[in-house]
Image (cartoon, rainbow, N blue to C red):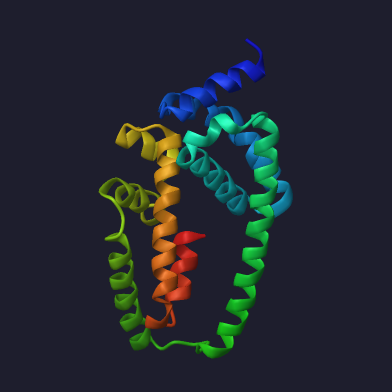
Length: 197
């Protein structure tokens, strides 16, 4: 079986919801997608985010995969496009942060810090309520306890690809919630940066 036939079989199985086929596709293409994303972003974290985003989209829209004629060419195209979109997003975030830095105090006294730390914990707890139990567990293990995807997958009995998909969804939900509640505390920017980037 050549690569084109194998890709067709994988796409066909994934479109039917086969997680093992998705895992196989992920393992086969993740390094290539990462390498292309890294060329554009020049940042390993951003490249990893592009990888997660692309494979999340593949799984989310798996029913439409059979419409793709050349999987590898399609992956290269969406990796390039996703990388460029992320670069634009980062540039906008950087400009916004520069503007906010003039608004927020440069030095926060200990009392203010303690108050804001409690506020941050409350806001994060609210954000986590919007996750499914599995997404919350994976998010906490990754972003709060600092565990890597492989060890999370082993401890929960899941595939690394499944962990990546759940983590990507969780990060988006939490990020959207935090951005929507940014007015609550000046230190929220630091929470977003520490946990989500």
